[in-house]
Image (cartoon, rainbow, N blue to C red):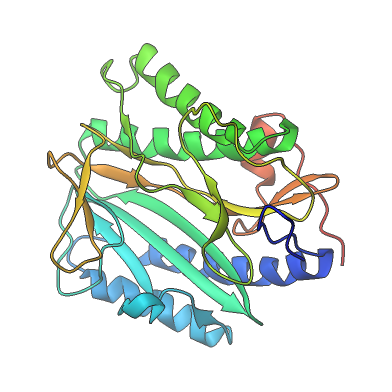
Length: 281
């Protein structure tokens, strides 16, 4: 099950169970997206996701993880990741990143999205859209690469091209480096790390049965972060706004499939020339 590189390689049946967990996460995030609006609290969003996960007979991955007190991570504006849901009231123009995980029969799914609320700053919209495109580019890179480092190369290419095209006013968004993607399976976080930037080490060799979470985090300013006194919430040190997108992906002998997307990633990957692999039954 585990290779010499400490990576957990899944059987086809295990990947199919992870797909069930991924669909629960997809349903929870879809429900949150349908409800999120100014005037709600971040705790309200947490309750929406908790109801979906429990109703599916699944277990939240985050609740109780190293003491984390909620079902979701909800990070607003300068909060990059791991924001704790609570009484904060959402306002027009807020950038809201929502991260969700669920467990089915001991196997995990993990996904995140960013929503920009009403009266949005165009640069915040560009930030969220660029982060999402970077995520999909990273996922698509898994289909034709031999090493995991292709993900970070693809993410950085999107960030660079967006700046060159003037999509964000010509400013290059920062790529957070302290927090990266990860392996996923019988544990929510496991080897290997999935970098969102180029590195000399091109990473683990891609093999069938590898499942990873691809999750770029981009910021409008400097990429430096710090952790608040709650020991969870990560914020930008310069107060700039952040966006976080994530999907769990399985590498199969015939290609890749996005476990946390309702369509397996077919629509967005198809735009990039990648056909989604068949999980079988």
